[in-house]
Every structure is written in C-alpha cells, then in structure tokens.
Length: 597
Image (cartoon, rainbow, N blue to C red; front, side):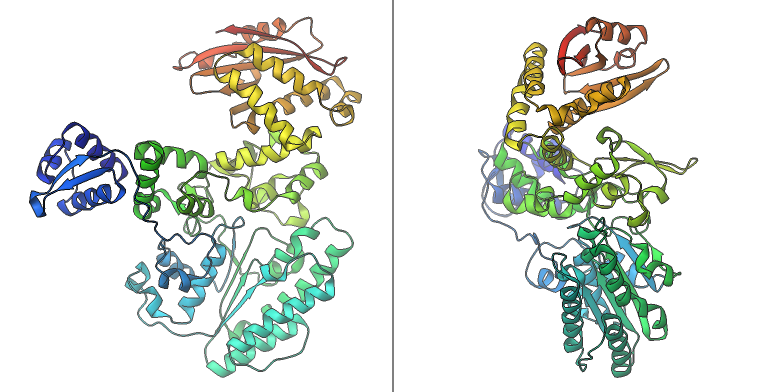
C-alpha cells in the first residue's frame, strides 16, 4: 500500500479539504473504502495529513511532514516466539512454513543460515508448536492447518550458549549444564555421563515418561567449533567432544518424533550428517527458502506503516524510502528460485531506531573470513560474482579449498542467479550494508593502515569523483598509494609481471567497493575483457590498467581498439574511458588519461 499512500498524500497537497469519495475518484484508488480509510488514518497519525469533521463528512488536507513518535514494538534481538506474540511486538507470520517443516516427510532436517537471520526464533517457534501451545498461535496461518495440537516432549540444545573461548573441560561442563536444564524442564532425574550418554538417557527417559516421540531441536550446532576451524591443536579435541554428543542420535530413532538442526556450516567429521544418512538438508530448498528473513510481500504487509513514518521523518516519499531500504538490506537468495529476502536483524534495527546503520554487519566481526582469505590467498575480486556448483559452496567446512563456501554460509555472499543447464550458481555480495561493511574492514587489513585513514581517503577520493573531477580524485588515489608502507604493498613486486599488474587491479577493486561504488572486473565483450567498469548514477567509467607503459594513453587506446566502451553506448549515462598506468619503480600511479566515449 506504499504506492497508494504516496499517491494520496500528493493528491491532498493539490486538493486540500477533500472527502474520501473525492480522494478515491481523484486518485483512481482501486482498494476498498476500508483500505482507504486505514491509509488516511495512518496519514493523520503520522502527521502527513490533517482532518476536519466526522464520519463520511471528514475532509483531509496535506500537512507539513512530521512524525508521530508513536513507536511500534519491533522485536529487535528477540529470539523467543512466546515473548514476541504475547508482548505486543510485530510478528511476521512464518507459521505456515513452520507447520510444513514440522510435518515434512523427513524425520531429520538441517537448515543452514547466516548468523542473526532468525534461526533461533524458528527453533523457538517449533518448540512452542511441538509443545502443543495452541494459544500462542491463535490468529496465525498455522491455525488453518493444525487441528490436533499434540504435546510432545521437546529437548532444545542451544549450543550458542556453549561458546568457544575456553578449554575442552569447560566445553564438556557447558554441554552438561545445557542438558541438565532440559532434564529440569522435562521433570527428569539428572544423569551424570558423557554429553552423548546424557543426551541418549534424556531422550529415552522423556519418551518413557510422556509416551510420545521426543523432538530434538539443536540450535547453532556448530557454534563451539567456529573459532577452532584452523586450530590444529584444539580443533580435533573439540570435534571429538561434539561427535560424542551427536553420535547417539543414530540409535535413538524409535524414540524420536523429529530432529532439527540449525547452523552456519557443515562439519562432516562430527558424523551427524553421515550417521543420519536420511537427513534432509533444506538449506537450498525452494520450499523453505523464505523461512528465515523477510520477503518483499512481508515488508509491504507488516512494515508499510514504518516505511511511511521513516519517509515522513526524512522528507522522502514512501516509494523513495522503500528503494533506499531495498538497496541497503535486501538481496539475499537461498535457493535457485528464491524471491528476494531482506536481512531481518537489520530491518528490525532500522525500524526500531528509525535510521540507517550497518546493524547486521556491525553485530559481529568476521575475523574467520579474513583469516580464510589469507589462508587461501583469495582474490577478493574473485569473491564477488563467483561461479560455483552447489556442492562447491555448501561443502563441509573441513574440506574447503577457498574462501567462497565460508563467505556464502556466513552471509557475505548470496545466490544471484542459477543456470539450470550447467547447474551452476553465480554468487555475489547481497547488498550495500554487507559491501560497505566488508570492505571497510578489508581495505585497512589489505594495505596495513588504520580504518580512520582509509575512511578519510574515501571521502577525499569519492567527493571529487562524484562531481566529475577525475583529476582531483586521481591525485587523492596517488597520495593514498604513496602512504602505504612498503612491506604491505610491495610483496607482489618480487613476483611475475602479470601478478604485479593483478595486484593493482585487486587493490583498485577493493578501494572502489569499499566506497559502495558499483564496480565490475574482467567485463567481457566479443574482443576481450576490460579490467574494470565503474557505474555511477549519471556516469559509467570503463577502466583499463597498464604497468610500466609509456603513458596511460596506451590503456585508452586498448579500450578503443577492442571496443570495450561500445556495449555501454546505448545507456542514458555518460560513458568515459579511463586509462591508468602504474609504475613498478615508484610503486604508485604514474599517469592517467580520461576521454569521453
């Protein structure tokens, strides 16, 4: 209803003191009178309109944009289903998908999603469902499907509580506390045993007491292992402990109703995936692709008032505000045919605080990812728009040969497209929040400088470039490159010519992506590949790099000779050819040349 709201407010600005009937006729409003009344009520509540009179005689006029300050309750950071639905918070109804998941043909199910993407809330919702909490689901979609509401004993293991910064004895102790808590909740005696032995007793005893199959929900099953993935000393020890916890599940089948695991990645050496050989992995399933995160339809249904209020605050129309939000937080896809998914953690933070920020990225530093980049000497330009088969980017963590699987599983890459004939996916950075956050941290690490220094450079470089002053922008780039200490910048110069030239391309890509400029590398046409293409709102720069050339004009000549700029000639933006020549002697930008195509 955002478009309709914008249309109504615009009409009221031109036709003050209009009745609902006049508004309906003047705007061509297609919805019901009740829908129109609701939108007008929202406009008055938010201060975008004022009303006079009562009932059908009420007239409406456009007001000076203000906001109401009547905050809705958004469950930012909340992960308990009962707390949300009984506490008056906005709840995006996923209960139909919860019903389908709980009653799918497979008894054992695994779901991988990035951190803070709603996995724990999903587990909490499943727990309430299997406990037969019909009262909590009143009015939700699931009430149309579930009629019996059988109560099952539920074991929930939240392994995010097990942490990682401790020794192996502490890990066993924390697992015991989690199991003891479940024993207490189910009214069972404490059993002192290994984690695996205790879980087996817990399931058998719960089955004996309640006479129903036991539901086992394991949230963040891989949390204790993330910081020891590449730790050759502690990693194997922690894996043995976790393997001991999970191994009894394969022998408990007669006592189980449903087993559900969530996590970020797969650890095949825990044996849980091989032992439960009929486990269904729904991580790439079209059917459950939207079970975590918010779809476009859900944004329109549950948060239209929030978008309208933010637009009122910021002096935008709702359509503009919607596009800003989409660019910042949308763009995730979790299957070949998945609709756009918004990051739920960021969206709830946005609507609670009423301002844009990197809520999801700022909630955790991806140190593991940067360690992975260094371990595999991964080219960051090869991360964005990477091609991969499903078994290459969702493989077990222990077998990764590059950074792409961990980047995808952690939420820093997502599916952009799928080729059903080749059965290959194109992976890319999902949105502006991830891109700016990722490169804000990556660029300082890459060049050995502090974040404040790279941020200052970004402003000095970006401002003149946006106003078309390439000369000033290149001078800023040259000064920045000159300030990079030799060891961080110069290692590549002991390698081949191609590797040295490639280093500048990678650095250029990171610099531009860091500033959230759309930059594409190795863009192909019929006569070759141009090194980079930068896309602005009003201009496109086709960029070619040279190393130790006579001048940058050689790079521009190559753009002309191979027709790199021709494919962009039909665009409405101006197209420029930018040649950059780097010097291996000065280890800096030597010259540049710019021509309009």
